[in-house]
Image 1 (cartoon, rainbow, N blue to C red):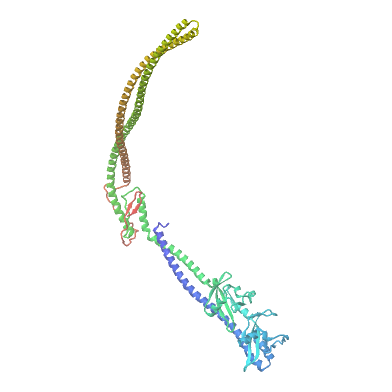
Image 2 (cartoon, helix red, strand yellow):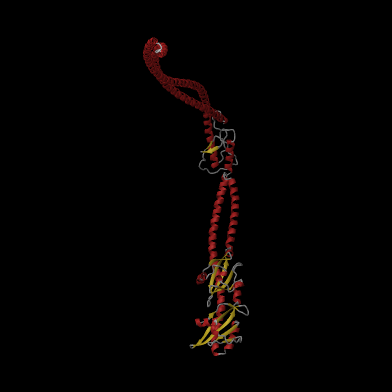
Length: 638
């Protein structure tokens, strides 16, 4: 909505007028409020004081009557004087309290024997004050009216004759106070000693505490207001704000208060505010219509220039068109500047079109070369990846060989250790076999000894048999023993022969086994020697395999670096190719954009359009900022 210049000017004008009227209304309101408060205060105080003066006159008249009756009480008939006082002063009754306690009444009332006038409050107050007093209002027991007693002491030449007083109803004062109503919601009240209500529109509040009207009506408030005749304060009565003015009643301890309703007192100010707001709305409406009509006629030329710019911007980029130059005002200057700008744009676009064609051709060449280089780089990267994979396989194989060589070396060392232990065992076996051979030889010697013993025993047994035969009958038992001994000797000889044969056989086999064990020991020593040699060879193979693995790892790292660099080169080539493709697309798009503009064949500047006959000339001002066309075909300022 506020995009329109006319709308912004109209809005700003209305804002300025509204602020001016509001400020003026505010100042006027404050001024009127001050004068209104002063006038209301004056009227309130004047109303309070005028009514208080009337009450004072009523009280003063009766005081003067009571005081004037003192002379007649001394020199004349007291009863007749009291009747005259009651009739002339409007007293319901007039009384004379005597120093002995007796009472003379205007209505002929004779008190009881125990009645003592000296005990009455009006009598005691007048004597105590030695002057005229007005008693507190009280309600008459017979009539129910509010009554006050005005009393004054009677003295002459130092002699005290008593106290004369009159009781007067104050209904007239109550009616007068109730008639004080400056506005419908305002009221007045009469109080005594700033504590007790004497008169109020609500008769039920008579002789009630003053705070029944409002909690703010305390003696301090009334004393403060009565001490300053022109002062007023705002109090709250039944939830409504009231302006209170208080005037003391001379000759009494009474106060007349007038409570003016705040809302009704300021009704005039609210009416002024309402009329000011209505006036403001009317002025704004009239101003808006007037400003709108004036701006429509004033900015019509600018709108025509805007429409022409929209037509050029929304068309097919026809740079051969020119705006109408009418007059010398700002619109004409904008049109002239636009025509010059379009002419420059036409020359620039012609040059840009030629350059864009050259850039497009170069971009095609770069893109084609980049794609070819990208393919070759991709092939090189693939070959390097295959080489890297083969080297990794070789590295894995060499590492496995090295691991196998290490395991074989460990196994060879273990076999060498076992073979050494076997050789040691064979040596022990050879030694054991030699010991067995020696033991067999000893056993042979023992067997030979046994054969010899058996032979000798057999020989002895034979001799014993011969001797027994010789002995005959006596030697028969000895012959039997000799026979048994010879049998045992023969059997021992046979066993010794068998043992000899077994020993000889075992000795031959032991000798053969000893030779075999010796040969096996020599063979085992040769095996240990060859295994040690194999172990040395495996150690050399392991060292060579480790060196080959390290070398292949270095080659693998170099190939990986070369592969990484090739991949990076391939990525760069791809990025370059992508950039070349984008450059190709951008150059093509630039060529299409430039080709969308319609320009003259040789950049000729068309003559400006002649102004129409109805165009009016405006005074010349500073040139308008030039315009440029954005990528979206919109014209922007720069």
